[in-house]
Length: 86
Image (cartoon, rainbow, N blue to C red; front, side, top):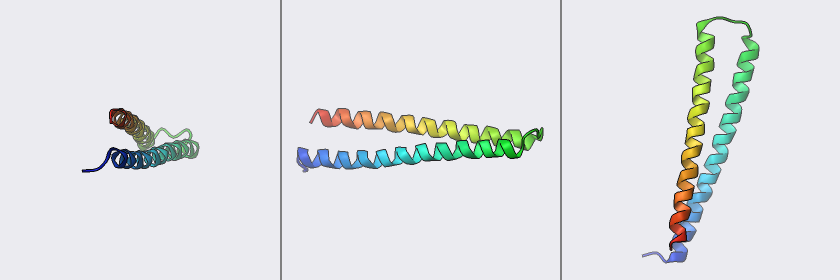
């Protein structure tokens, strides 16, 4: 059985990985935003249905990444709550 100190260290290491994942999610959201702006500029004025679908898909991807980020924040909070009880 791991000691309390070892358990806290393991949780801290996992939370560091979550933090790195959060940074990657933020970077992905920024890139998607840039892509959406580039797409809008390139296809300005187009009424083609595929253009609208592409914008909608990028917006949906951004929303899902935001939800993912929120989920990681909850996970971190729960892990910190747990380690506070040790």
